[in-house]
Length: 308
Ligand code: NAI
Image 1 (cartoon, rainbow, N blue to C red):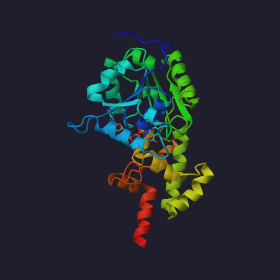
Image 2: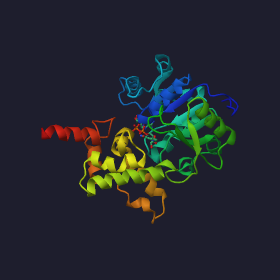
Image 3: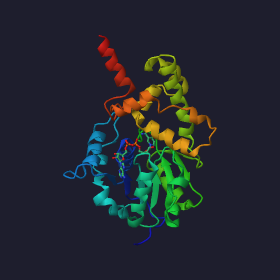
Image 4: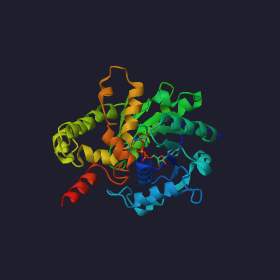
């Protein structure tokens, strides 16, 4: 297979994982006029692209709008990893945005190694998993082409992009992806070190925890807790709980598991309880936030209705 060069422009992107983030990232790449292949797993053998297609259908109706135009929406092509993974060879950048689990990401990277053109940038949208762990077990070529590009939710509107490169990452490839993110995707690229949770999640999870503590320990409603923590912490529109609804409540225990696996024994993060039993029950019952039956705010409205 021919080798891609860091000088090749980014003409086509593959996004793997069509969930909250992958779908939104695909839309923003399409907004830049660049074709995207959006892949997810096969859940229904009779309708093999149903997961990615469902994500695309939801994107078309997303509020605030994910696509800038109908023309942009047409640039996203859906598929599934069982049938279409070899098509990453058509792409200049592969963005992995599957669930925050190291074992699943490793399994996917192993499959990718056999099909991608060497020299193609591969990046993970992980929130917390260190790059060193992501590339463990992979060859030198993979480590050279790999970086972390951590987008924020919603990807069209959040300007920050954390970029993490490893000691083996090809500087020219990292520069190419960062430049594309800046010029084409409108991102402010911040280079972070390969530390657990990088910059934003290492810090951000503490104020999420403050909001949860305030609500549970002080018996406050989510609105009251958000009045204390939301605006003062710079989250005026959604408040902290609204932000967690948007991010996906089911991501919270994954964040904690992955951070506690890498942080020292005495790190203050270990006291954080974003896997509180109440949160685990909400996830088990399907209240995973906007993408599920609802979240903190929807539950609250239902509670309000019951009182009437
Ligand atoms: P999600 O749970 O909404 O979506 C994950 C998608 O990946 C699902 O559609 C699932 O079917 C698919 N998937 C699972 N295994 C797969 C595989 N082997 N191959 C292809 N697709 C597979 O997850 P979300 O929230 O979009 O998170 C994705 C990544 O982005 C995670 O690493 C997360 O930590 C990170 N992230 C999430 C943010 C958020 O606000 N939700 C913000 C920034 C980063």
